[in-house]
Length: 607
Image (cartoon, rainbow, N blue to C red; front, top):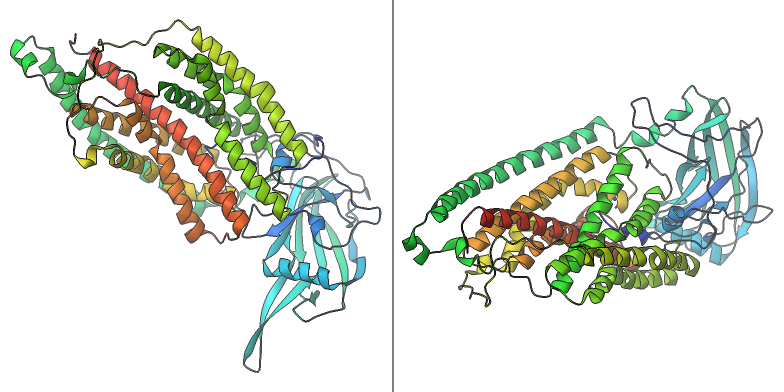
């Protein structure tokens, strides 16, 4: 949801911002205990007290990124004028705009067919409403921090004298059904009355619309701590849970069979190699072949080691960032429709984990005898943020042209740049200096020859691209089913709250990536190809390419998204997510291969 990703980095900036200041409303937290989620700081109200209803956004239902301000449609406005609620950073990133509405939903005060306003719609207003109905626009509102949705209107096909004609109707009446327990709001539902709609089809003019609403309050015994459970019913439906667990079991069985098969073969071959290479046989040394034959080149540092270390450092940062986000999710920091909490966590944690990227990149660069450490630190700062900023600049320009709330205004961009300049870059530099001054050395069990050994001619299926395809297919097959639910959450309107299942899938992904990369590295060394450094990174990160390929399948086959803005947002930000996957899984694959290569060459006699 559209949500992996949940394994991704700053893609969620695809819902952009507002320039309004930050204000913290009632604090809300979660508890994963069976009795429900613990909500702190509940709002309490008195009989007749005004509880504001805030309008967040409107937009086409099939294009979740294409959202607009509620006031962009000519609805009735409050008599005292539209007021805007101040927002948190995460709410801004989520493209929310909290505008006041003329609906008076006083606590425990019923209303029946209350008039909001009556107005004659001009041709321009009719055209705006007609376009909204044609594109199946919806509205989203918040009442006491509870979200509600409704549609602007409806379309009907009418057949007259054998000729079909499409008619457009605008809903003019809204029913609010609110449930309360004592002095707290528990639930709110919104429904529109199809019988109270005006015809705004092509050719109509001088249409008078009478906007009304009704409010009904109902007492319930549901405790306040459980008021969010209704939003969890769909993802926790037994049928959907069965699909999730079936996917995990299927992935585990597939992974165990394939990895067990490869491990058995690999261990048998390695055992035979260890026995053969450990014997003091001069004749064997003269006929030396296989992976021991390249012991003098296997620890030769890779070309473009500055870029390589920057990739490894950034990939390590994203790996730890994902672990921190999962940790927060598993302890209940995020809950359904908690506006922007996840986005805020990603932005803040990315800034704070920048020191990891700087330290790892500079430390490995020093171990590889690199001298341009300043360039290495700068490259680490920009290796992911640079492409992301270019992509964001293009997509934000598109959103500005569309006048969408997905456009980050100048003030919010300044805040993000300040965070990046005053937190991310300094922490990366400090981490890089610490890594540069680290006295650890690169522990190579074998000495490296002065001149590299020539690599024999290899068949086409042992080249980089076929190896990447083989390496990426198995990890992708382990997460394929879960990807749909994540996409439907991030790029749709479904809710994803089963973080424990997602974490299990994440662990499976890491394990499979590490194992398949180790196996391919061994097969590469066995044919005397000692250039395994970049190959192991590319093979490990190739799953990101598979995920991006899945984006095309999801967009054209599983979603109804359309339009230039939505298309560019989807493929643009998913490209950055998949690039983050590539860096993270590439780092996992390379580090696993490094441990394996050190182990096998440490176990034999080599000079």
